[in-house]
Image (cartoon, rainbow, N blue to C red; front, side, top):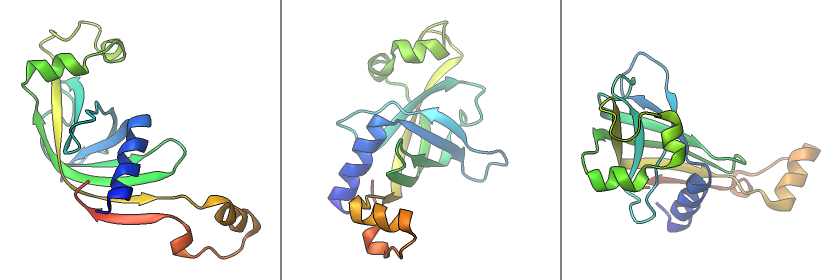
Length: 154
């Protein structure tokens, strides 16, 4: 994947860390999760959830991202596994996380999942002023004016 697209993705995802997650082959819909990001780990993202959550069993999964402002879209494939590193759990625990899990990080029903990213597909939309003018005036927009698209490791 082009490094500019990858950098744009991670920057936008950090500003709007929400992803729709679904286990591969699941009969239920994807659900929104708040990603816990680590600036030094672009191979994984983390989530806190209850052990009875529909994705808690882990396994092959897919996540869809649409960032605030609708400037980056992504579909990410990977594997969900339980994160057992207490240091990472402590590092990512915050007041915002505790708002969802008021019994605290030692609550045995709360788990941390790690989404090990295998690959993804990312679209960025940056039309600029010329593209925005074409959009509102109904003029034809060429695909190369609409943004970038990349496939591969995210």
